[in-house]
Length: 229
Length: 75
Image (tube, rainbow over all chains, first blue to last red; front, side, top):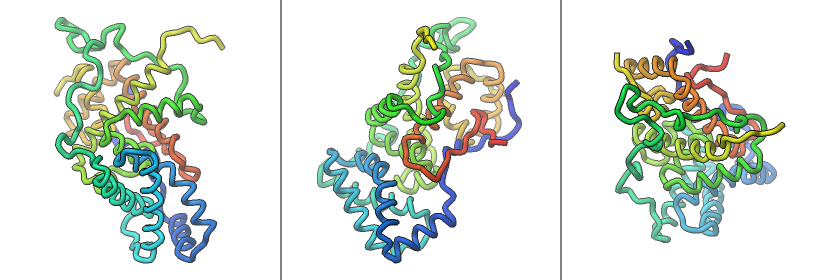
């Protein structure tokens, strides 16, 4: 009944319209506007740290990487041609910087298994065994509605912590993809380009990562308990 | 038309949301979702997860564009 004839569109959690605002920011940075620089550093550094942590072994090194990246951004601003968004360009510098630091740290993300792991993303015991309802949800295994929408309004401190922990627990590649796609809202082709992934592998990593974060939210928001008030 | 059981559906949710499934498979997903409350809830929760993750980022000028689990654009 909810079926809809419209074709599925990629879930867009919000890529920025990269037009006027970005041109203005770029102009300000190029003209040496210190306030604009301070603002953009403050706004983007948290995300950059999160991404850098995917490649290097310590928070301190990640901070170095972010700092190095900003220096490289300042040096390279005049050469930025606007073929990607400014943010994607900054992230590209970050990934390059972080990778070379990761190599020195001997903590490069392994290239062997692209998807990090195999197997189902939902516990098989939540589905029926052989019988008429084979591989359908069991009564106990079926998802329950959550107490509240985690994305409604401001993120509660507890939810924020839970999401950060769930992200930190993801294998490096899944984390990088989920951070760029969902946290940052980059488009899939930008993420493929940045991380050197095929569209298929990017989707596998996104799926596995999201499924784990969903499971973490489920543990927190889906407890079967009476909530008063 | 291909039919789909719940345990298969949960593994193609992201391909479905990304619009990456071949038309016949996507149709099978839609048909399944139309008749399965639990899977519809699962898909909604995957979407809610992505949106909650987006709130972690610093996007003061960049409100997320919210879509339903069927990938429908906001009205």
